[in-house]
Length: 429
Image: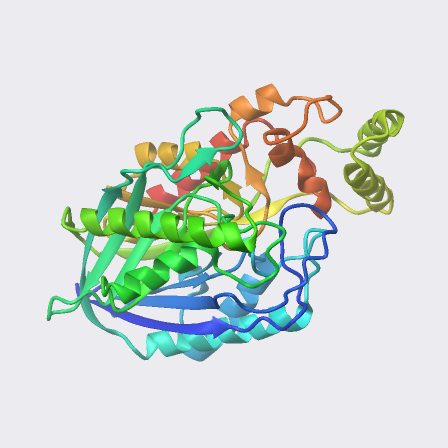
């Protein structure tokens, strides 16, 4: 049983990105090769222990996450630290000015040397965090965004994330050893013309939090933002600098202004579960794929999608399966429940998690433990029901571009499915 004492350790290291490593995002085959570092990417780790169980949050300034890489990190930490693998979460911040660590076709070539060096950095940083553990208490709250910083790219005037959820970790001297903050908004201030490594607005906000001495350490957990971009977004370096400063300063000011609205929360019991789940996908049998290919060939459009579907057809005919299997993880520290989505849930999913979670302070985390693409709402599926429809753009994109990973579209109930599965796991913690 827990002794009721919570210990926290923190550590951070820069993630080195070699020159000419491809940056990820903004469309296929763009060849966005890194030409330098505007601001460094970080691996930041928080380790919590109650004397019996340890939970480790490994948050990286990375655009994607890879399930195999996450398990490689867990496996080494289990050996070194003699801990349970279920309590280790590995997530990304979703900056679009960094390299990928997950395989795909065309969106930024995977550099295996970069991936392997990052894995080593994550392991070393986690071990360092464990050695830093000292007693803390937890206080949590929400800071309201006074100025809306993002927009819903799928639904005009649709919902965005209205709050910054935060957790302060306080030693006996009353300082803030760690500030965890969680918000849902893409890291896309800089666009495809920007060829320097950057953690985007997330990195700028983290730096301000430290510079303003709001905490000794900071950890950003990327929220549900599959349909939320910064406003404006996708800018070149010159225009992006101005907007990055405005967005990060506004965000940090609002965060700071809400930090006094704190509630002390329990940290026990502490537990975590990772459950491997087959996600509900459309049946893309060979005949189905062939029919779609025939239509796309006649329209002579969507060349990238056509090529990937042709490859998927060969892949299936060779005896391979298109199943999508994901790791769903829930971590609990008393009143805190962390729901780790292995992809990009739309913001509406986080609001539903908040309604249904058994804990009074739920936190949804995107791009965690894997890259299973977007998890849209049923409404989005209803409005984009046919892969061959003339209409494209956002909404269509989030449902059908999984072909770049040999993934068929999800069934329209994917959001309900994930939330139900998370609630089943949470109920047992």
